[in-house]
Length: 318
Image (tube, rainbow, N blue to C red; front, side, top):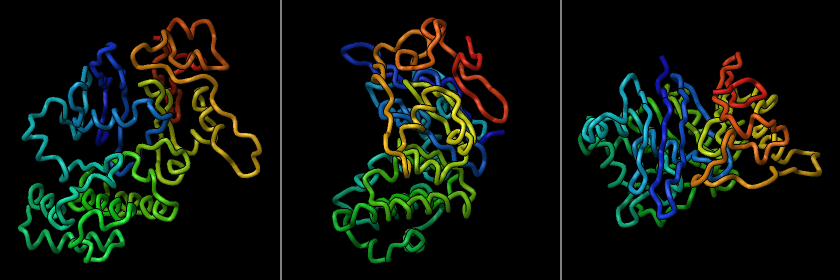
């Protein structure tokens, strides 16, 4: 049984212009000790998806339907107190923009210790010792505990957040754009730390990023999103070397490569969640579109070898 199974998750936002269907029926799973990458253009619903999985959606957003099964429990049906018991200890989160996630008026020590004491079975002294140990593991000196967030560099703050995510050895860590705005040296260190979550602690990881190069470096399997839906899932090497969905083919082809003089972009613009196109949502931009593509929406279909794709070129009619 998968550690996490997401079934037909829908996350919408109420706006003055209408219903903003940011995540519109996503299904995927994460295995034990697996790193699942979630990729796609900005605005495709990646961050909203993981916020929905962790029940972090705030009004005017709401979860319109679906199931999120974690170790057999539907997270969407748990009470607030039940969900609180799982956070940090079983489920932890490295948010997008986590460099700005620390409270600016509290020392790092207060924030790390508070998370350990509130969600773990430790007293304050044990928590302080644990905080020093985990800061060392992410390459930071114990002196950082006495500092305020503004005294740290972006990479140091990022590592503090990762230490907090690791510290209670959760079963699942969700990392949303954890290397955005970091220099390449800090990016490399953060990716190594995330890999250690699985290799040393046996944690599973959902890694969200629009940076395909970091997916190639870190993840085992990859789910590519477009317009609020998953359009392709597969082993990361297979997705990069032999992408199936036309959108994924164009996305991979748009990555700069050594010796490649011309980088092609994807024609057209992504549609608005206020008014998704009928049929396949990629058909207005797709060079391989057929008449059926504008009429019938393809569903994510297993094509063998652990791969799935939502495209009429491979069947998939609903």
